[in-house]
Image (cartoon, rainbow, N blue to C red; front, side):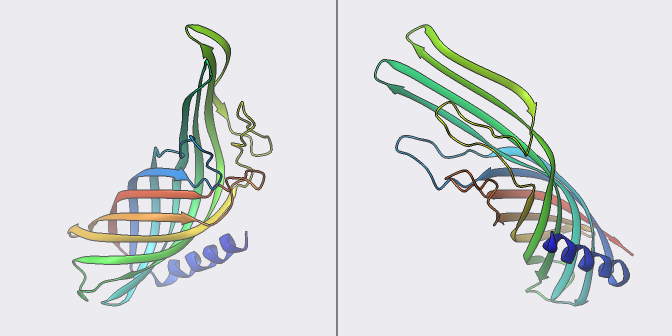
Length: 229
């Protein structure tokens, strides 16, 4: 929460000093880290989502600018496990989506020292999860005979409850707050429109109980529209 407060203060300063307003639309590919991979298990897979944002940006010099945004970001991940053990076949699927309100602040460096061209981006963000949904499926079978099966479809994510896999894996997301680092690259397509890509490294453990210590990872490709103030 301290990070969110600091970012909010920085954002309010740009209301006075900004030279441009920004509108962002983008597509996300997000996943989480997993430090508890067991032999034969698969890594969490990427999940698609969207990003919408508005912001303010100032350019005190030709070679750099500073900005802040308010974003709606869809993150999450997918997981699929399929394996045979003795005579049995096991299948487990998880689809997790988490919606965040995010407040990134960033620095842009323009190597060409001009308004047009490309730039490098470095920043930090604070985010708060407003909600989410998930689906889970588990099946144990022998040949064509289903021995055990469990299915939940599109349930609301409860940050105070545990989500446990059939073999005791912890898939819970208990922490709504997240902080992280952004790196990116942008190219101006036409006047007032930029194609930008960012990669976000989440630093917050989403669940203390999970041995995998999951942290958000997010790749975004989007269009940014610059509107002079």
